[in-house]
Length: 185
Image 1 (cartoon, one colour):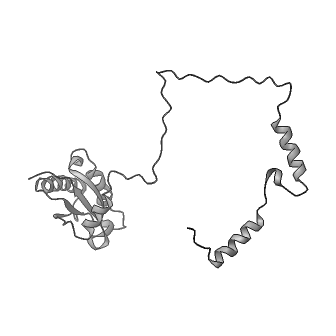
Image 2 (cartoon, rainbow, N blue to C red):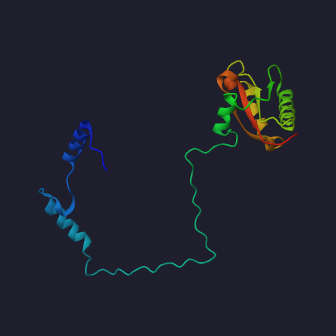
Image 3 (tube, one colour):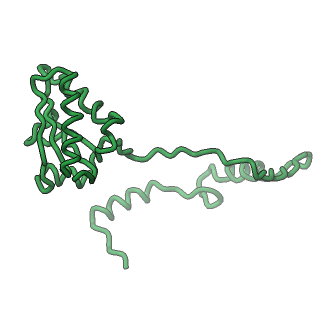
């Protein structure tokens, strides 16, 4: 059962239908005869036509169809934590097992600390940890930029389910949630 149109919808619909004109043979204006004659000449084949039907091409068993690449609406990068899990971590429904603060460390010391921290947390059976990188003096600190690279390193990547910037109350863009895969203990 269809519901009746609201008064403003009915008014809008009447404006739209007032501007629509039929096409083809039912056309009633002075250009209708011109359109009919044009369509008639275009659709009738000429007597001198040498048109031959095209034979279908048989597919050979060795030929493969061309690959079609379909880009998804939003591809999730491997670094993203599943949205529901990230929400659970940010709302403390999935506890943050440990925190690592990289303030005051240089790159080599920070990288070593991140690797050891992730390994220990995974072995300890923790499911989520927080790495505090800080934002740097101008909001684009080197540790903040490099920590995602370190977390993508093949040496520790198999232990990590995903990572993303933390919520504001956990440090915002100066911290990272790291979701760990099951294992350890």
